[in-house]
Length: 154
Image 1 (spheres, one colour):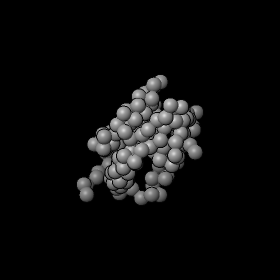
Image 2: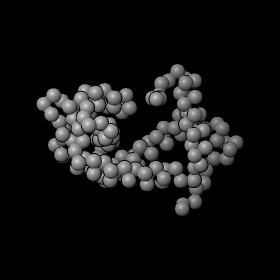
Image 3: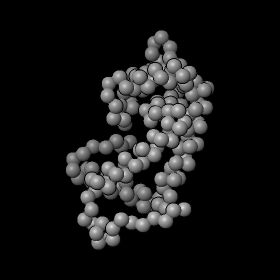
Image 4: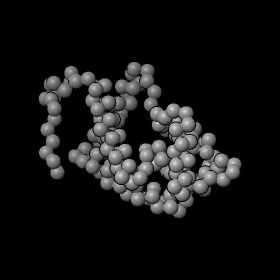
């Protein structure tokens, strides 16, 4: 395991801007995840689409797009493009009514990416106890609330 050293002392960290560190974390982690997904032949939206279809025999295309629009920062038509690309690769099938479902090949690609995703999660969380991770998320959620922001919650 690589040796890790904090950038600042505790006394100096207290004055560091949360916006910078939260953004830098998001950028680094999302880049790492997207790189892994690209190695598996998927984009992040395609990964999320396959996951939406995993637990359901079939769904309306519009329903999947509507659900994911709340999670992903994508413009109009981009999710439809990703659905089309998955369909064209044979990873999902679509009927004439716009209902889509994951195919056996799609399940295999999704499962392979899921195994990679678990390894990636372990990498990202290395050296961070679950209690610290939970506390960090709670702190970030509180900061979002404090500034009147909104973040997904279920």
